[in-house]
Image 1 (cartoon, rainbow, N blue to C red):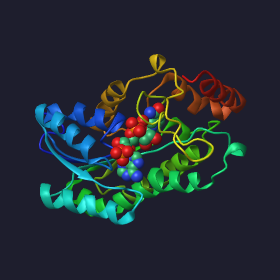
Image 2: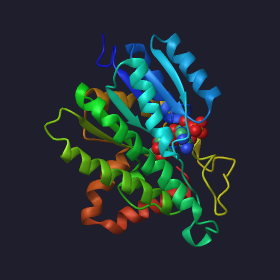
Image 3: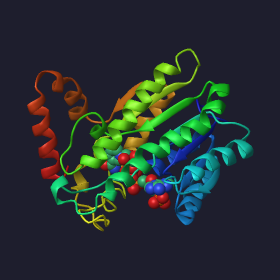
Image 4: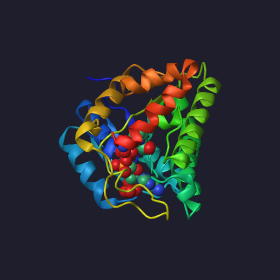
Length: 267
Ligand SMILES: NC(=O)c1ccc[n+]([C@@H]2O[C@H](COP(=O)([O-])OP(=O)(O)OC[C@H]3O[C@@H](n4cnc5c(N)ncnc54)[C@H](OP(=O)(O)O)[C@@H]3O)[C@@H](O)[C@H]2O)c1
């Protein structure tokens, strides 16, 4: 029997990367998982793997850039599972371009829609159910939600918005029994780098990262499960991320240089 045994957990962005790894890491505790993303085929395969590990799993294809889809996935989850205990706002997209090179500024709106507004819409629909369950909201932000990162202006802005929203909501929810865990991963091996939107708004197609030198999605998921079990306020997955959080108060120029080097060295 684990913390999440029999609990209903909705994970957005569960077809790939961190979301999929989190679903697989939670599955042995035998929760009910509602898995959301656009790709029905990838979701079905994730649901199949989770079921084999002991979970009940529901694949709910949806485009979370559309507010009506955000409300629909919560409604379907609660109808089929009888409630909702944990919401993991994880779906996300990124960019890779210096600001002055961006020729298609619609990238900025798209990043906000998926990384920030989708979480707002899903959370709005989920909150009445989470209140009843005295549940947990997880927001997967990024170190780029805590500090600036070059080549990522629109991404960092969307993640700062996400962090600001959930830091504020946490205070509003004091005494309700609903907790908020913010996750700020450093670089993780996933599909997000290959899919990053370049200067013209098209995906890069190949990951620019030094993938042998960065955390795997499974490692990130293990850290997340522990943070979720403890209902921690904030999980930062790397030493340099934890260092940067405090160092920017005293030596902000040093933190800028660390961020610039991480992007230059792609790790
Ligand atoms: N990987 C990193 O280095 C890193 C670092 C810090 C933070 N993060 C954050 O971690 C989260 C997960 O990212 P990841 O690295 O695991 O990326 P990923 O492998 O690309 O996975 C992203 C997930 O989001 C889904 N998604 C994207 N757009 C969507 C939309 N419009 N509607 C519904 N689902 C959508 C994708 O599925 P479909 O394409 O099928 O819709 C996929 O399941 C993101 O919020 C990201 O910003 C990642």
